[in-house]
Image 1 (cartoon, helix red, strand yellow):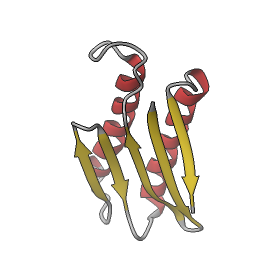
Image 2 (image 1 turned 180 degrees about the vertical axis):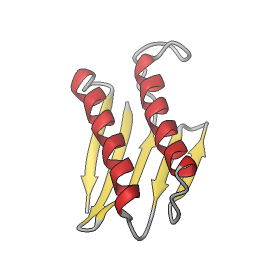
Image 3 (image 1 turned 135 degrees about the vertical axis):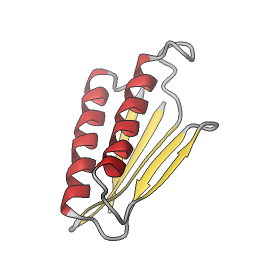
Image 4 (image 1 turned 135 degrees about the horizontal axis):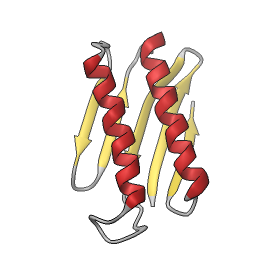
Length: 105
């Protein structure tokens, strides 16, 4: 199962961590994993392309792990993270047995 952990403060999302595998299908054919990877990769690319500073990223293949974090959320950065979270929640609505989203303050 894919585990998503969202850390929030009043000022916005400070971190999104994604780990694990969905095992919806065999590796290379798993559309849930591919969807989550695409969302998170696009999210990270948005920070780079838009030149948004103050966010740190971790990408790891084995074990699968993607994380974006900041100590001081910006309005633009938070908007990108919110959009990514909406997309992840959409996948969870369709495939709840393969992706879990938890929130922490």
